[in-house]
Image 1 (cartoon, one colour):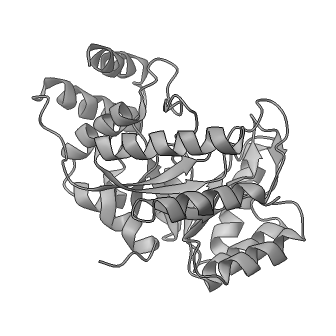
Image 2 (tube, rainbow, N blue to C red):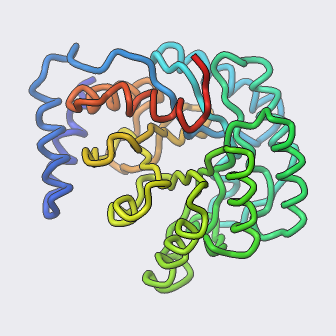
Length: 301
């Protein structure tokens, strides 16, 4: 716990020039001064988690541990998708087998795992037949995480590519959200990459988009079909409380949350605890933690 609050102090020092950073500094400062029990205690849906594609046995050991950790952290549901890392600094290798692992995890833990379809190549036109055939089963609750422009995995797929635009149409047709990793400055000029995003959002108004690891606030203002992913290191854009969801991006056997900070890498339950403290400072914690996600996932009850 001491390391946790050291991280909060350090992040206030490192952030600092923009209005958003000032808002986050104020927020984390309040968290430090509050009693440790002052946190949101309600249900949480984690909309961004990954399988571990080393081997089948290692993956399912990891899933078992993740579910135990989620229960410990009070997480009600976990959206499970394709592994984010593959091999660092190498293009990904796609395998439909990974979707089978996701489905097997869902069948073992149907009360907590929510399956996301994502083991297809976004640049391969034959993927479209696979995607529609799978979505027709009415089991998958979302698509993703799809790596479009991703510097670590060296993928440079435009968000408005012909294939991706057809994937987005399928997402709308079957009423599932799409989780995307898209560093719009990678592999192109920033302005062009951002316009790719804008075009995809504009041409698919009925498709719900989640841009992993936060997203540009100006695009949030422009497009109501864009969701903001809150992680343990995020600011809270309070003007969009109806469109904020939670995503940890957990993806490794040690259950460390790596996204967002090189200073402090919490375990899963510690990251969720940080999120609960952030949520305590908001006026719509339950929406951000649960209801917004439940709505776009079409969860009943």
